[in-house]
Image 1 (cartoon, one colour):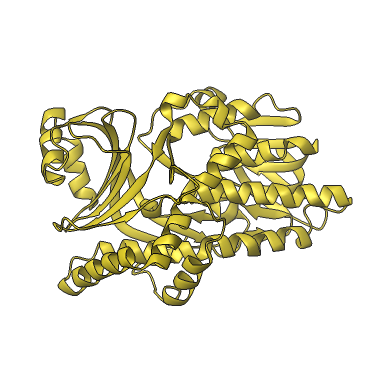
Image 2 (cartoon, rainbow, N blue to C red; image 1 turned 135 degrees about the vertical axis):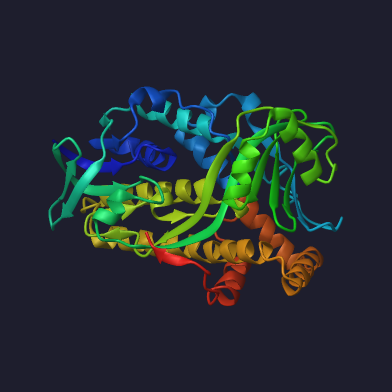
Length: 414
């Protein structure tokens, strides 16, 4: 089988790339290990995706936004960052142009909408229940061998098959991995006191709690702890779990009641050492797998997919090879500039705010108060959270200069 582009992975990033390529009349293969029925109707997985204003705009352009029930889209009007038992919070609010920092949308609904817009797209062939076993590229094509022995060729191959991408690895591209040694558990809670559409990031001593406001008095909670403590919480009855959550939130939200299933995920961040090779590129988590503390994982994946599609479209208009190095390498540079500073900053924040030593506690409080008082820093954070600027210059400079030298405590190749 021969295609123009073969995309390994039919998750949100891979599907968004296929959708962004729709106007170009290309033959696209989507290779996905899950069956089509599960792609069409994915189960609830606990995760709520914080979408920036830019991501919402891109999803509208791709036709995804319109396929998500408006009642499932929750506005995010502010964000509060708290440290330990202190009542002080650094507050991030939208600029005057936007009424919201962004939006919260369930991950499974984004996946469903993305598949819905692509499955009937002309030129797209879904090879479900399949994965890439081997891949090689030469000057003319990429050749992919699937796990059932079938071979397909494409002018360009794309890895979009998770942060632990087997396709990226098969191409000989390593990745820097930061294993934070913790597990996050995500679930929905009904809460007594109103959340006012404000997100919380609460770096407590010995735990991290995130509160994401949903419709009504419901919220998504992200609790980060060592894995053995998460296992103990998973074993609690619903009533025991409710009382434990009230205690962990210091009763600031009143009575709390579990409103969904509980889902644990290991906390591992990944950054590919290369995003491109000959007739090959990585998108989504296969390129950059973010720690969720700054909520930019899918936002980066979507942005990278759309900008790559734009580069391919420009090459097609010029009548040149869209898989050539002079197309892929500029895209890689742009995506690194867009993602690397915030990736480093996010990892540094996660390490600092998981450190409960007395000096770290002091630095944490100082950082929050300084961020609240300095207008330029606060504005840069607003731009980063909301995506109103595709590349917030101040935040990039701060992260690039102050954080690039910080090394993760645990680093290995993925």
